[in-house]
Image (cartoon, rainbow, N blue to C red; front, side):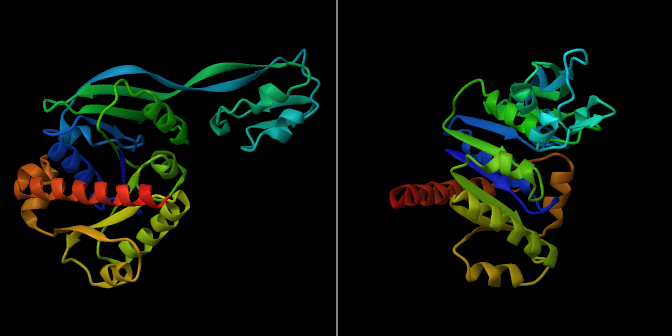
Length: 288
């Protein structure tokens, strides 16, 4: 089963939930954990895997043979990302806009375009002391696009597992879609504040498009109001767990401890959470 943990905004406790869920299930299941927040990965600070550098993440960038190029502009027209331009009879390439789709190369009538690999980051793999297989991507600073490295990170899986957990980037961007699109279940983490409700609604729009079952965890319960709960009561998305706003939780997380270690009773709650998720996934599959 593939479970994506996402949130409409940063700082809601998404990684707290993802790492604690993985830790609670590791004694009964084989776990693949993917930290897809490639711009600022931090799950390894809690799970402590022995990480090894696998390989660079690269995308193919067009290289123009000026002697063969007729500057017809067809490559410019087929590029959806405006990474090419014809200026004074020459085709110019803007590498940081290129998504590496290869459309320009395939459509060049003069066969004047070849490709070279451009390094955009690194992929890492390691095992934790509890046997969790940890995959992490790290986007190179100044690179604008996390999506290609997320796809390559997910494709780098070295072994299959009973449960795969995707720790999604924050927000509701293309990077979140790239992380969650193939998930069997999307677990949304929010907080009971106006910002939390606003961004939760954005993520629910994505979940609806994915047509995946989903549920919600409310973190820092007690700091805001009841608007998130009232909204969810009128929606098909259940509240699966609440985590209170407590100083010992905040202090423990700040020191790199898992929630299941700070408050051991939560280990059983996360196991029960998984059972609820599995039940919803089975119902969803039966209704298809």
